[in-house]
Length: 295
Image 1 (cartoon, rainbow, N blue to C red):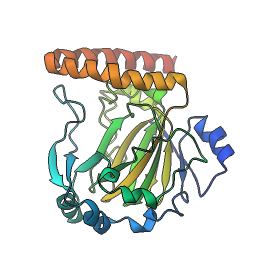
Image 2 (cartoon, rainbow, N blue to C red):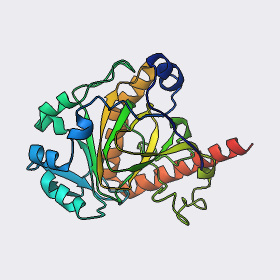
Image 3 (cartoon, rainbow, N blue to C red):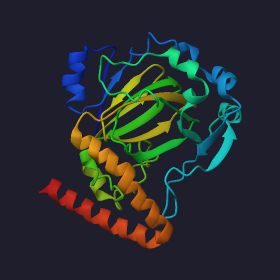
Image 4 (cartoon, rainbow, N blue to C red):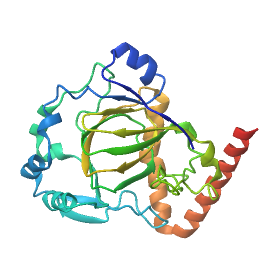
């Protein structure tokens, strides 16, 4: 992989942001965007346990999906309080995915402000909380609705690996899915690089990496691939903004309504055949991308 660091600024002029990052589809970390939010220092494990500790949440482990795995199928369920107790004790490879804590505690929306000065189209009914124990992993994928994301880290550190949407074939994207067949787990550790023998096109994939700390806000342009590893137990909030292009909106709608339904149906009716078919297709696409890049 050919990686560079993500640009980082304390603050940024809105016009500069839109011109150099939003319209250019380039990621950025803004360290001070959340400084004025009550949430930055107010939100912690005890506060959340008090607010929503009794609510049941779906948990996800670090195992990559296989031919039989339905979309977003949970691996376990606990109350939020039980989950917090578990990850506080030490490394725990369990995470909470797309938990709308604000449905249960709407007063939390008063603890932050929407950064409308940076971009328009925020889906204000759906701010989402992402929580993970130390060592938990969000495997390489892109967001199915093709939205722009502002992802603010509130506790713990998180390592993030990012690639533009256009790198999808070098990343071995599964057809009719938003996931990569390759495993990027602990890619940064000695001897733990991705399996270049099985996935040679990965060597030419151009992307970014960054470690998010308390208060950092990562701008992820629409369609960006991302792989996240929780270095500490922590949580973050994502604010989503609709894709600003007609093409992007249509692609997101197709992914949600068409692509996902086809994949779900085929996984139910012919899972092994469907898996092998998609694997053959993605390998051919990766080989073509590799040949094109090297020519």
